[in-house]
Length: 317
Image 1 (cartoon, helix red, strand yellow):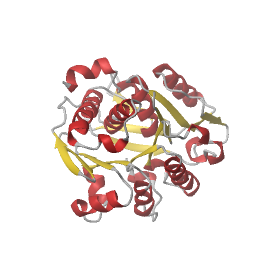
Image 2 (cartoon, rainbow, N blue to C red; image 1 turned 180 degrees about the horizontal axis):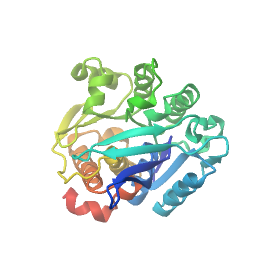
Image 3 (cartoon, helix red, strand yellow; image 1 turned 90 degrees about the horizontal axis):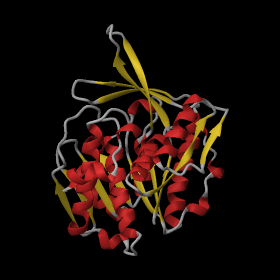
């Protein structure tokens, strides 16, 4: 079985809710974009590893237990006393769209020691996945970019989800060059529609530049609107699975997990990624990924909302 290694932050989402007297309260739920992808792949039955660092605190304990309960391999989840596990306070508007307030000053994820990364896990039997939240500070930024390059050199299929959170970037720090560099180190790039317009100078004409620069598949999601996919030989769009929206927190991560799980399953059979880059092969994979996202938005939380194959089967038909 092909493995998916997700690198980056794991955190606790403190989801806003109300109690009987109308006062605000917060529900503790584990999450973090790459951690969600690892849990998503594992819950779908895939071989998922998470590599990152959390604190020696009750939140780190909760994340490690939740990952292990979901079937994620945590052999390389580091613990440190030098920084706390990061927190994200999450509020939901009436449409289920989330808004974040991050507590992430010198937290454990940002202090991850790059020299501890298990490079022996990188091979042509691995998909390596990362996001932009580990590009926000100098040390962890370089680690992330180096790992993307090392993974590609080792024969991994590399995956990058832009997953842009503006309030994680310091005032005056331009995210564009770092995120662009990471995109050019990835075989698979996933962007939201808004990110596509933010990080591609001329969105439609910039797709060929990304493909010429090293990307092999670019996928753009847009909520309930069409999902678009581009590769060197063509493009396609699908109508996403529709759903009642309660909480969009992990929707994009669920989509990525579904897509990477499908790719890992097919690559494990001995085919090359290039053989999968056509409409006939990609359409059902994107439909499955869309069903994963649709299931997730109907539930609260991140890890807690991610589907199993049994949850998805009726939606993906």
